[in-house]
Each structure stands twice: as C-alpha cells, then as structure tokens.
Figure: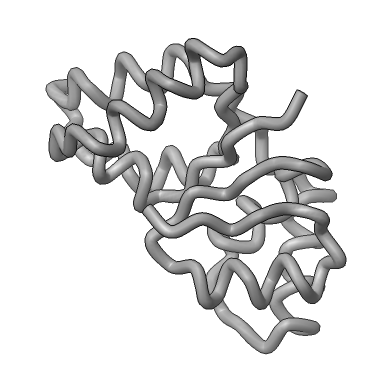
Length: 127
C-alpha cells in the first residue's frame, strides 16, 4: 500500500488549519493510505516549546516518523551532491519514500529533482 510522505509544507498547512490539507489527509486515512515523514522534518516544523501546536501534535500521532540515523544522513548527503541541491531535509523526505508513494511538498521543484536523481518511483505532489 502506498503512503503519503509529508514534507514540511504539509505539516505547516495543517498547523495553520488549512482545510484543504486537513481534508486531504483525512481522505487518505479513510482509504487506508499511511502517512510517513523523517524525524528531521518534524524538527523543522515543531516550533512551540509549550506544545501548543495541537493540530500538528494530533497529526504526528498518525504519522510513521522514520529516524535519521548515520546511514540515512550519509545517503542524504550523497543524494544532495548528485542532485546539486542543498536541503538535507528534502533529501531525507525523498529517501524515506517507497515505490508508489506520493510526497506532499511546498517545494515540488527540488523534490522532483531529488526523486529523479535517486531513481525513486514516487509522485511529487504540490501542497
């Protein structure tokens, strides 16, 4: 079963209460489509030390958050060098995606370039 891989833009949209993104994620849940991201994406969007990002906290409870270990970090660095891009967070989002997944992102250009460079069989979807 394919999953939606969430880049920071998807989380920011939920945190802002954007109804279209919330509806999209609810539809995915109804259809049994999993949600996935990397831990470094969470670091990018979790900004409130008091934990008042209630919508974001609720969403994170339903997301498979993959750790960024030494191997993933090195693979992300190699991918960045090959693609000629500079954002390691984007690279980890591509690398946690599996064949058939869709990556929701506010930066489709860079994510497509990274996915193409990695040979990832994924769809990059603007959010």
